[in-house]
Length: 225
Image 1 (cartoon, rainbow, N blue to C red):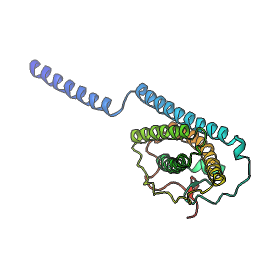
Image 2 (cartoon, rainbow, N blue to C red):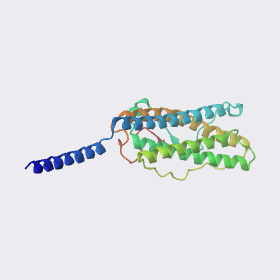
Image 3 (spheres, rainbow, N blue to C red):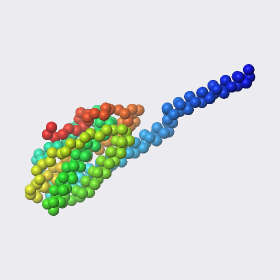
Image 4 (cartoon, helix red, strand yellow):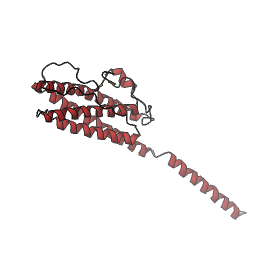
């Protein structure tokens, strides 16, 4: 009977150890969760800093005296335009926000590449435009990595509705100025959006909150639609 009792105790102990192992696997250690959270926050800090750098680069370009004339914003019909209300920041959802920011950045990337191509053909290159495009691509890639990490889907980016090719130098200057001014507004808004999105990481459901559909109301809309 003693042998039988020892065997039963060993069997029960083995079963308990197996259950404990399963429980440990299902609930990661707290330090692992905190490390994961810090890494995500660090990634968002980098995204925010890259966006701030683009904002400053755009502001510096617009300080050029060639862009000192007031212009009408009417050439570009497919640029993302922001409503920019402070209340919109409190209604953002994590994944739709990242998806929309990515789509908007890709749209600006297409427009700047078009402008740079036209300027090169006319031998009227815009100062530091190539550098700006390179920084935009870098930010797009960094955002894509964060989207892949969080399982965030991409929104298809339609082909932009581009204005007629500028025939004169002054037209190229005004076209460049309009695009830069719109991008300055976008970078300023995107910086605040990324800061708000980073704060969502503190939520327990931060990485899964929000649908995977279109962007939430107030994040952006398309001009002319």
